[in-house]
Image (cartoon, rainbow, N blue to C red; front, side, top):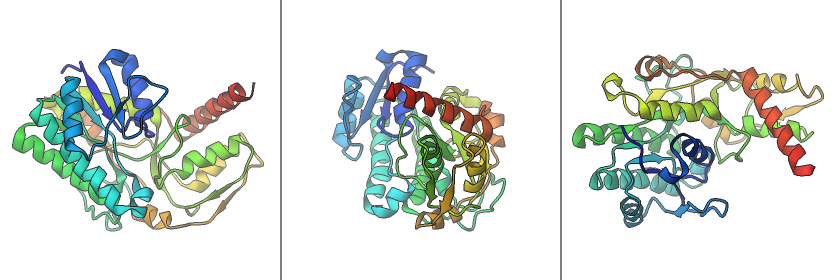
Amino acid sequence: MTFEKILVTGAGGQIGSELVPFLSDVFGKDRVIPSDIRLSTADSRFVKLDVTDRAAVDLVVEKHKVDTVFHLAAILSASGEKNPELAYRVNISGLYNVFESALKNKVGLVMTPSSIGVFGPDTPKENVPIETITRPVTMYGITKLMAEYLGNYYHSRFGLNARGLRFPGLISYKTPPGGGTTDYSVEMIIEAVKGKNYACFLKEDSKLPMMYMPDALDSLLKLAEAEDSRLKHRTDFNITSFSVTPKQLETEIKRYYPSFEVTYHPDFRQAIADSWPGSLDASAAVQEWDFHPNFSLQATTMDMISNLRGKQISQTA
């Protein structure tokens, strides 16, 4: 499989803003085309693209002779509940446009990340396999589940090489959270490094699967490069690094900031978190494309704090 011209949609988001430099390091800057509905003044390669505009998607794919798409443009869980119509248009109509343009232009690979948002309150709570009861209760989850089915359909019906994985909550120090239910984890660490306390919007015992961004980026590329003959699944791989509650994260942070305090004030995001499982079975990803995360909770927290401290020092020096 070749990766000559790689289009990244949603390149200004939490994942996209880190995936673009990651792919640029691997394949070279001239092969990566970052796109977003908002232009980035920091990167001259950026292309303005609204994925809900089919003609605009076609124009970008044709003009740049795109052969690979990492489709990250999406409205996340908490933001989607505030504006369900926008979530549907971006997450479903946008994906449909990307798939149709990929077929028209003979794009070799479309990566369509999914999420633990596809699960619902009827899903088992621990060690959840790929094939299970889903029944999501958010617009985000509904659109992501439909995206998984849509990717499988385009593969079986038209032969499109669509692949995807279900991201757990993602933790990163480089980009501000983007409206997800697991954003508390990033916010909590950032506030601790700032010397402030934190008011958490989830209950202290809300256990959810998580992953540090370097593992997420490695996983995307590893699945993209996997031999097609090994894949028994296509768009719904479970991946996870560790499961953690807000209280456990607070305890870990206190190893570095003993006086750090967290208060717990659950809001509407608690109902979303309650509908998701506490741990996932990632064995299919291990067997079919050698998934292997490197960061534990302890390693993630240490690296986050180390980098945020460095960031603060460089900004105030």
